[in-house]
Length: 292
Image 1: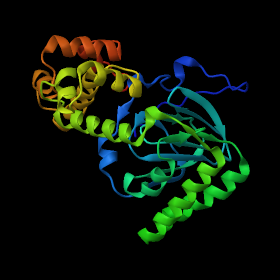
Image 2: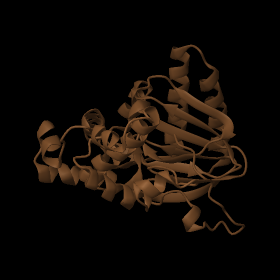
Image 3: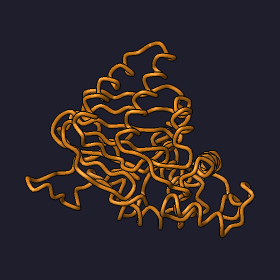
Image 4: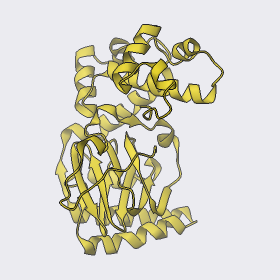
């Protein structure tokens, strides 16, 4: 998860739009490496910031001090000390604020069997928990999960935690977020991450999963509010920065082609659109903005 410059929140809880985290799902990053992780991850008692991202794992943030700007899908709010947020599988989410101490728990798919079986084709009624009693019941479980070395006991504690969360917020029918669709989306995103450097298109990916291009396009847009072409190019741009960091001696053209771009002009157009300046200006500016 990338660090972000913190958003400023004034006394009236109004956000300066130019300083807030991304306000839509359009620039979110799929954390492919995160979804390959099978261990529970916890980031306790610290300032936790992350830019817009999503994965198949469940992510919980519990705010301990001050206040934290949290966005899940298209809903943005400010959580105060003693409040929590839950990002379910493939929910796009981010959170930031400079001095808020929090604990983040990320639960991999291997620990979510009972949770997903219980929910079936339903989703959480709310992503945000403001009831202090629920927080006080859940927060010690976060710490126990972090400290528990016995994976069987850890799994049981996770089931208790998720059970308390579901009881607190309730469930609603959400056919679009069915288990089958979530599994399909996971496979699609994994396919893109593996084949981004190849000549993949809407048609080729749809054919891989035995869908018509039109149906596949509607499915992808319904989940991520962007078309697959834009998503693939965003992945390629992210890979470009990763390759450049790993191989700083390679030429720009080598990195562009290895990232999967069909041509240098295509890369330049996308780079300028996403970062607001040409690659030359970006890499020759001392205080360049962060990459995608």
